[in-house]
Image 1 (cartoon, rainbow, N blue to C red):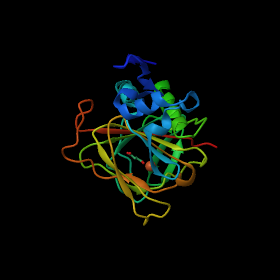
Image 2 (cartoon, rainbow, N blue to C red):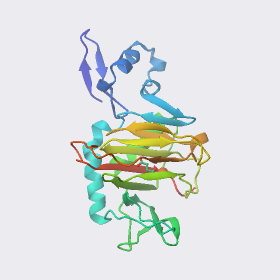
Image 3 (cartoon, helix red, strand yellow):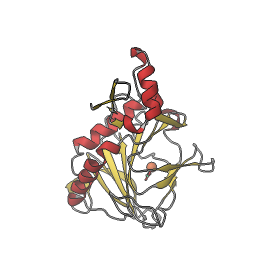
Image 4 (tube, helix red, strand yellow):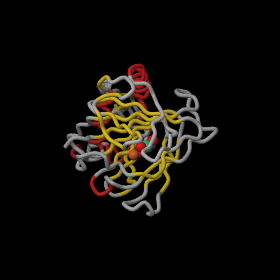
Length: 249
Ligand code: SIN
Ligand code: FE2
């Protein structure tokens, strides 16, 4: 926990659940005016996206550099690759995975596997800093006891996208999906249970986290192509997305 001194002499927490409260002046004011049993900061910090779905802006911001380092460490063992869908389409986002299970697609279908098909080695362990962030983001979204066993890492370059899809290869549909954005901003699309349901767009920036589960666990979602001018000092013209899931029930 970090504290700073307000003008009126009151000490404030500046980091709560990994969120830099200094970027939330309104939240701090509400936070300081609350009675102790309302001390939980999360309601002021999360934006509802849909039923059971929340956008936690800046939730990962203060850890972003460490998260990016952890991604590079994973990628040193399990290199980013462009996978092919069963339909023969090469995905524009490059992918890697860490944790017990990695998400794989090839000509034969989509699945989770315990080994990287490129090396035939187990996927790299999920770095504790990644796991911790995912658990805290789930908690801040009222999904207690999230135990992710898979972390898919997507890397987007200019023009790369992810078409509308459901995350439905998991056995455990009680656990939420926790999705962390790092680097260049992108437009995230969140629809409904049917592919044709209208999808709403949300700009996701460096350090933003989206969590969905419960009634929206199987909602269609994706990202629009990464814009030509999209960039961030930490990653240049690239964007990374970490998707944490609990696959095994
Ligand atoms: C995904 O849902 O597979 C990726 C979403 C994102 O990159 O934000
Ligand atoms: Fe997804």
